[in-house]
Image (cartoon, rainbow, N blue to C red; front, top):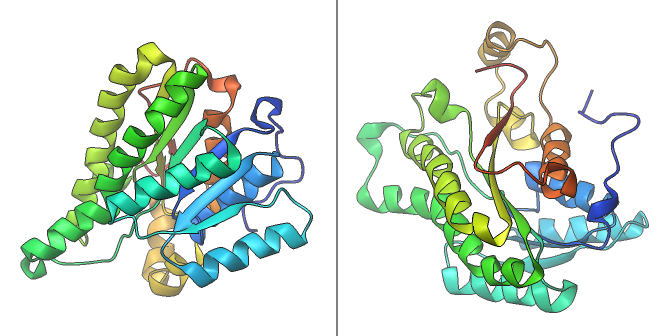
Length: 259
């Protein structure tokens, strides 16, 4: 089981829509790129992992899907992020959907955190989400609206003890979402927060899915199945489509019933 389903929903309103995805080269981000491309969207995605990003774009192109446009980008460099968004709009037209997916949940203990590491975790997990939203806002406003999907995490809800800087950043994403939803709402720009549970990406399974982790999932989740990247991507499709036109300032949890 990998999270795929036999007959996923199709959203006609997404066909031809310009989508920008951060952190799209692997994990949840790669699934977002694949799912939006399958809907006939014009997808641009940015990632620091250049080889993986180009490989994903080539694979989707080889399968006959709508070819996504990959842009190498370190999202800690805000000027480069702005340039990437401008490039995406030039290639695909005004951005109608922003998926602020990129993040990094490296484990750390409080006693080991330096000021530099703390600032880097905020830059990797929080700061770029605001500046990406800031950059796409004029495009969405001029087009009559759009959808911004910020990515949080259930870690702040359950208080995970092994990554306090990451937990702090992801908690802040919820606050950012509500503030931007209120400010951008009069322009018909919807801002929502996706909150994934423990998603079985290759990285998660390689680094942290130990027998203890398996037991924790069995004890905490309501559903016995595992959460996979396509489970997150399908919720993002709904939040991007016109079907969710009156959904904003909310968080949408996809965690198998963990919290």
